[in-house]
Length: 120
Image (cartoon, rainbow, N blue to C red; front, side):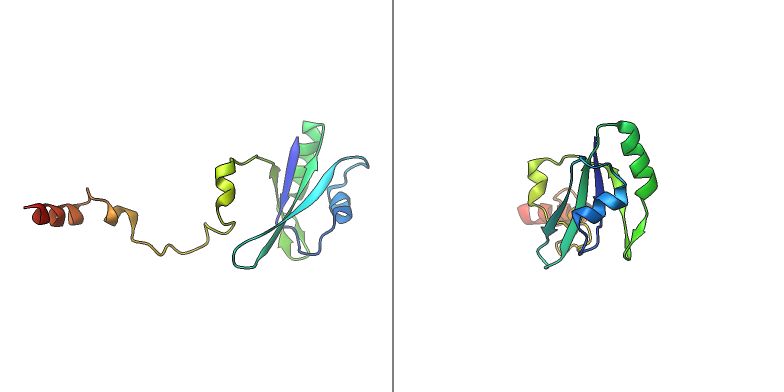
């Protein structure tokens, strides 16, 4: 099972990740760094465990843990579809700049009466 440890501090090393997760030597773990379009850096760790019990213990002990001012998010790693990889990492936090979707639909009450009037 692969455990995702998100929201790691910027100067976090793989050695420190191994100490924090209290994993035995020989267990594969790594830190991944990704950049968003606004210049921000996001770091998360992946820990590869053979036992589901060890993974559940790690999730229970580290989820919500505050490390160097960063609250860690720990959960089972879920692979993402390739189509999602093109999105910005912070797309949910950005304000919507386009027209409200429901107002732009042709079937909405306001736009359908105007469209009918133009067709006549």
